[in-house]
Image 1: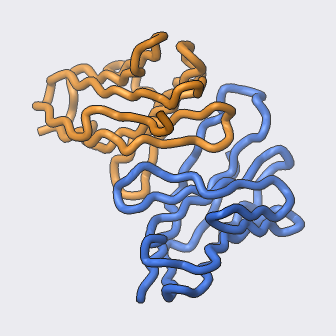
Image 2: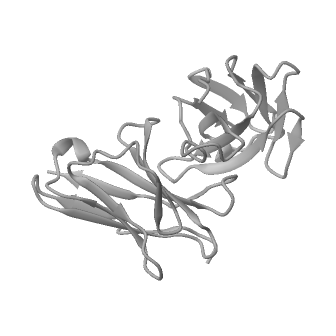
Image 3: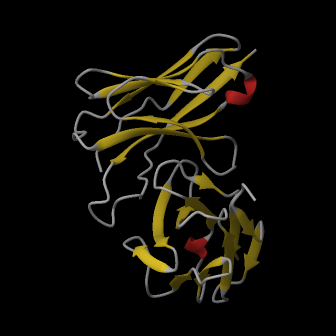
Length: 115
Length: 112
């Protein structure tokens, strides 16, 4: 799996957009970018994923650069409950082997949303 | 139900004792994954199943760890002769199509 690099921590004011960057310069053409978060000690929660195009769902938006070497997760209006560790993960899109499906977590970004 | 149920929530074992953790995946999900989180932010993949078949076990310390997913039963992760370094939170996740996993809330194992 491609390695990802994220800043260790970020702050955001409540109500503002939180933009979390991720570098994945060695990503290959068949790998998706996934974002998960872990709030306190709960199980990781799926947020969003994408391959090439930008994606949006009820939780967040994912912006992937044209060369696919980096991406940004955007929480449009951060709330205190969005304080969590955010993980950017790349993984194969195809069932080409048993590594398909496995998530390789990095260190993540600790996002703190303050009042 | 729409959640992955892990039991027990907390488990304390003396060094050398056996520990058994359970995971009931979401009904209809054919993939099950086990992860170990030792320190904050450090996840280690252990094993995955496709239905009752082992899919990927490259992360399993085979000497003491074993896992099963049998039909009509919760999946299980068993650690024989626990060691202090096995203290961790063990997360189970299930998935229908290897896209978005749903994780359980974890079992915190403390070996004393």
